[in-house]
Length: 334
Ligand SMILES: Nc1ncnc2c1ncn2[C@@H]1O[C@H](COP(=O)(O)OP(=O)(O)OP(=O)(O)O)[C@@H](O)[C@H]1O
View 1: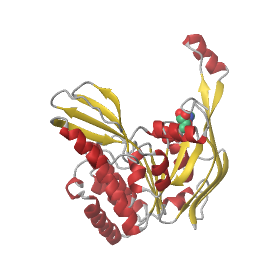
View 2: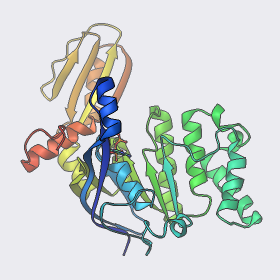
View 3: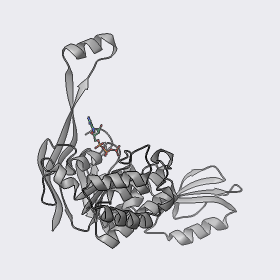
View 4: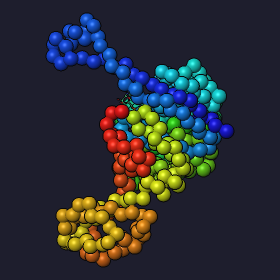
């Protein structure tokens, strides 16, 4: 059964336009002109209880706008939303007791206070009993390994430490759904992995429904069963991650640095860039075993550094467009 349902959801922003210079500023004051930005166009989606859904797309695709409408922060221009039986537009307060939100780029913790104070304040805002707040903080502290951070003012935490505290704070009132908007943005590989592991544990242990937006292909691969990809405010693909991986996410990029100059001559590898000692290679993991390839590459010379990454989401979306024969121009404004 769906606990999040959106039908034909749209959001149009009116943005003031202004010609350049003083004359333009005066003109804009006397008779302001507006242009419309259609951030979300006719999106329909359903999310089941306990599901971990990836809602992904490139910059400006409409992810945050959709999340803000699903949580009641923004009102839709058109369409219907039902979250846990409530209409977020009219029942935002009621809904806030049942959901949690984390916006990776915006903090819900008090900047000058230590996280512990924020947790206690939030517990009171959510009208929880003192004993319950204590128990919950203790559970989340252990789960998120934030014991040592509880007394440090938020402004002194690293981004990765802050995000762990942010997610813990959003879970304080045991929400049924958690909306995570770019929780791994700006984090290094190790911290990113830590956050992903935490989200995995959270979903497995408490069956919390997770609506995750990201433009990181690794987030979906590791966390989600289903992914919805949006671009220019529209759904491009709604599919199981298994199919998505099989059809569109086989390419991996290997960056390898050698101590000396090497020549790569491998029939199944595409060399994207080579400076002799630093090489960027594309590999199709459906045709070529990654372990064997790495081992072949390591035999060529002493390796100083190696990373394997996903291609940017833009390239994956480009592949989807080509496969669906939608044509080019996917990155231009629709
Ligand atoms: N308050 C606003 N006023 C005007 N335009 C807006 C507003 N919020 C978003 N937009 C525009 O709506 C479009 C979608 O933005 P949105 O923030 O939802 O994208 P996003 O997929 O979350 O992008 P990102 O990954 O960069 O955060 C963009 O063109 C953006 O400029």
